[in-house]
Image 1 (tube, rainbow, N blue to C red):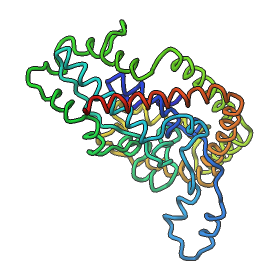
Image 2 (image 1 turned 90 degrees about the vertical axis):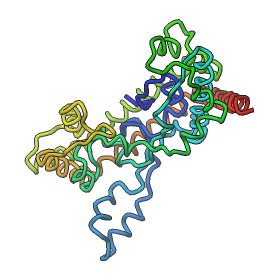
Image 3 (image 1 turned 45 degrees about the horizontal axis):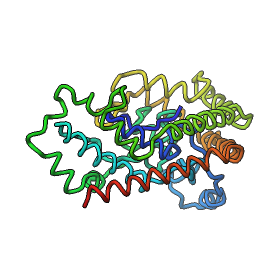
Image 4 (image 1 turned 45 degrees about the vertical axis):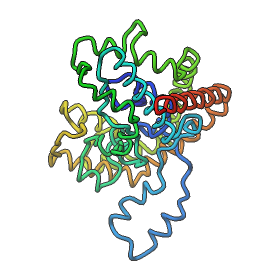
Length: 335
């Protein structure tokens, strides 16, 4: 239901994303929000000088991707530290096995932009987005990375190791087996174990996954959410469309092409798709759908945290241990 990783080849990065499992989820049901103060939006709407662009986005003003679960996982900066440690540790380990470790993805984290975060699951939230992108997920807008992040991933020592001409290229036979394997002897296996990804961690994450999934599913069954979806459906029917749920439309267009919305791949929005997307976004605004979904989800997730405080406290403790281990490993490598 949630995307923990950035779909990278290295298993290490998929593992570290669990540290920030609540940071900017792929769908609104997985991301609670603080109940927004609507007085600011109201005062803006009363002004005669408000632009059409501002009015078009008022319904998502203050919408956030933050979840009540997030405080128990590492923040973005700490998460990057762990990712940097994994890159550095894998570089050294793979060199010892005769391979040049190469991680080219950059250290990426999700943006706080609710439109980019929720669009893949729910479709466009604003008319402007609908006109520009239709139902393309726009993954390049969902994530952010910088050259400084990538540079920081490797110390001077690990960069030297990675550029060693005697090492075999990542495309060489045996590279993947040396990095990660089912026997648990790969560099990635060794690295994550050294950082603290142990049986306790994965057991707690498994419990957390169940807790959050149940909370999110219950939120979507809440009468306030089903009522808002009903309003959206009636609005779409009034525009000549017989859809039951905006997620059905998003899923339909997401499946329309294998490269649809992929980062770095050109996608041309057809006139038909744009027309549907604009109608969809307009109905989301008139029904206040996404704010209802996120506000209600926030309530259910906050209650789930309260009801499972011991599990979440344990995850917070284990996350802190992993961060401390990562900082120590980086300090050792950088000596």
